[in-house]
Length: 67
Image 1 (tube, rainbow, N blue to C red):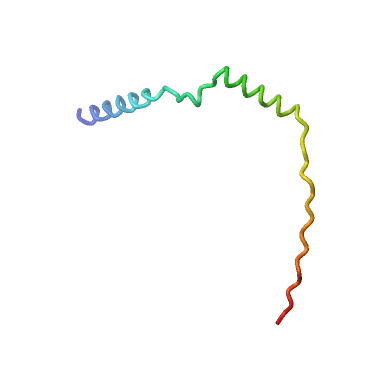
Image 2 (cartoon, rainbow, N blue to C red; image 1 turned 45 degrees about the vertical axis):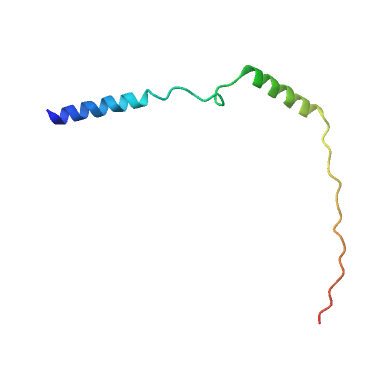
């Protein structure tokens, strides 16, 4: 009898603990305003021309003489 009671309490505790955390933080839930601003910023980034950095030649250094 005690063994079944312990198993029953364990099952109730397990089921109760699994139903507690259903809320999600606001960073997980998508926001329509944020999605719209993100799409606008991405479309603006795509329309600007990409600039390439100029190639820099290595500087010449003086050779050190062995003593």
